[in-house]
Image 1 (spheres, rainbow over the protein chains, first blue to last red):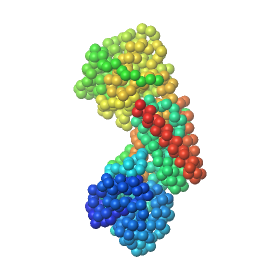
Image 2: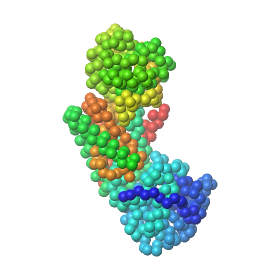
Image 3: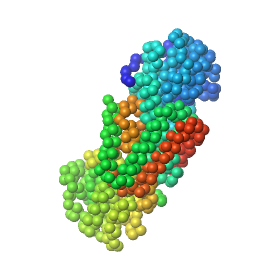
Image 4: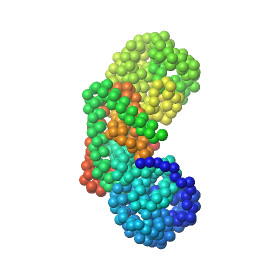
Amino acid sequence: MSAAPGPAGWPADYCVTIVGLGLMGGSIARALAPHHPAALWAVDRDPAVLDRARREGVITRGFTDAREPLDRSDLVIVCLYPGDAIRWINENSIHMKKSAVITDICGVKTPLIDGVTPLRDGEPDYVPGHPMAGRERWGYGESTASLFTGCSYILTPLPRNRPESIRLVETLARTLGAARVVFTDAATHDEYIAFTSQIPHVLSVAYMHASESRPVTPFAGGSFGDVSRVALINERIWTELFLRNRDRLTPEIRKLARRLNELADLIDGKDAPALAESLREARRMKEAYDAADHR
Amino acid sequence: MSAAPGPAGWPADYCVTIVGLGLMGGSIARALAPHHPAALWAVDRDPAVLDRARREGVITRGFTDAREPLDRSDLVIVCLYPGDAIRWINENSIHMKKSAVITDICGVKTPLIDGVTPLRDGEPDYVPGHPMAGRERWGYGESTASLFTGCSYILTPLPRNRPESIRLVETLARTLGAARVVFTDAATHDEYIAFTSQIPHVLSVAYMHASESRPVTPFAGGSFGDVSRVALINERIWTELFLRNRDRLTPEIRKLARRLNELADLIDGKDAPALAESLREARRMKEAYDAADHR
């Protein structure tokens, strides 16, 4: 796991095709547009979205049939939900230039790597990626050029990846505005992402369930807002992400539930010094994370 | 439970005494100072803090002995931890003007009301309050005039309170910058605050414990920051708040742990439609809260 500064410029002679022009695909297009790629194309099943993006100057051309742009694309960025992304790459890589690079943006990486049929030497190169950015709204209409500004962009390259393919996706990440590009393996990614991203979403959902819609709003301060924010959840993508990472996620959920019950026991036990020490320990851990984050 | 617009101005001829010049007391003093009360006094056991606040023009005079200012104070704002606040009010109300109003800022209200010896008619009037504001740091050095800007300020008046006393504390809340003043009873306050404020703090602590200090920082996005923010916890005040509200808090903690385990069961069961419906239900609840909040 390491973070390295990226190459300076975006290769302006490259033809880029974005597959799926939703929140993520649309935001990538908006962030790339000012760098004037030779072509910035998009594939989407909705012609109205393609038309809007073209009129807005976000893409140079839109296609509902993927075959047309693929044999001229140098970089193909697949912005679909995991299952759709796997199917799309497996069905369409045959239409691409042999020198093309494919990347994706999915929040789970092991299922993608397991699902994508290995491409052989001399075929398009698939470099798995995950920009850690999102919103509580979705669709092209919510896309924004600044979505990736300051984010962590995680790459889980494969042993068979060509070094120049990895460099290209790293350059993409920097060009989109990522503050850091993190290189790791898919298993580590999926384990840690279960904790840092999926657990907060599960928590937010469980917290809403536990609210039982009681009229608590007048008593809601900053910490209520923090914990409930991502309950404005896109159930389609998150259902898929949770299920595809369930072997790593549900042990984390059950561990957190145990830690909560342990705190309840400590409080019911009225042992103030032990409870204070438990809170102090949590603060020390948070301080250590904050220090690591600002390195 | 209701919110009403407050009277316009702060009574500039009032003598105000703040007891305990920490984060909360210091911030109240800073927010009141521009309104030039006839006197803005503070009582603290630390003469250095009093001296600093006086030099900074935040208070007009500081006292380490409470008796001196009390017989001339119209409003006494007790900014101590709950147990200390109860003791202080019981020991010192005898030194106050009979017309004085006492309020506090504690995050639990039933224990305060149960602990403060009932003051009789014609004695100082205790109006319990709770400004929902705080920081992840504490002490006078962290105090800021804007701490209460936009906050909910909750009042749980007692049947014996004089109407003009309640109005005075409501004016205080507005003057400090509260966006809304919420009137409710102590039991409702303590039940809802367990859910909206104490649970997020317990969660943040449990989340840090569950992290087991794994090196997750490169995978930390916005939702990790949200859930972990209040783990920078002041263990002394929160230990006391948790313990004093434990009968309401620990059932909420255990309920949340059950909801988490139910979600884990749903994910392990691989029933995508049921999981999606569960997430959708959480989103609906969050949307309803957001709508209620912006009324």
